[in-house]
Length: 283
Image (tube, rainbow, N blue to C red):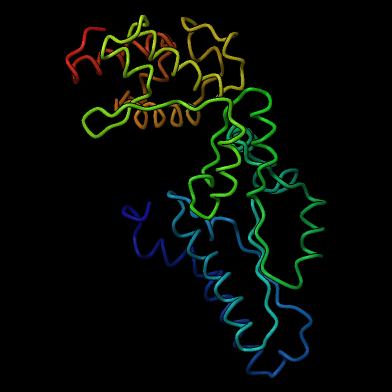
């Protein structure tokens, strides 16, 4: 995170792309070799356009490459910046299968090595951005899983977001409680406007989220079964915990989520009790 990053770490991480690009540009200008170039291609990242909260240095260095392509173009010089998304079969994702699986659960569509090379061939005329294709997310939703692609929250993806909203069979309505919005079924349970108990309402939501995380149909998920038996690792636990706080504003300890006896039901009970204490409602 930016707040916890030292100036030295920031400079070290962006130097290769920022200073390296300037060095190449200045060397070509000094030797008057720019006129001999057919292209000046820089491999950037989608992160330079949409951003990632935990990779501010990486995002900044790639945003620089995108801006530098525009700068060279303004000088009448060749320049192309390709904002790549994730690439499977080779490189980092190939070596870290758990990251690739996590991205697939979020509906992120990777390109393979052959597609990467085709894009390189075709990108010699303009800036290209890859990795925001919604094919993977659409396929997941057709299978009944929600998916959660962070790009959809970007205003520039408004057309895609609207399209998904139209295709969705329904969306969770929300009810406001002390400036925080809770899912409708939880709000009704809190107001005693439903035959569903607060615990059951919370369990339904937690169950759906877990179903999407592990890509297991919700009807096959056993709420009393230990989460670890479903393959819940630290990465999934972190995403699960973040979801709980975002929806309920309840901070479930990380080690509680990873506890070998924790289940959907026990986590839901903890959430319901916290809501009861906060709002003065009997679970």
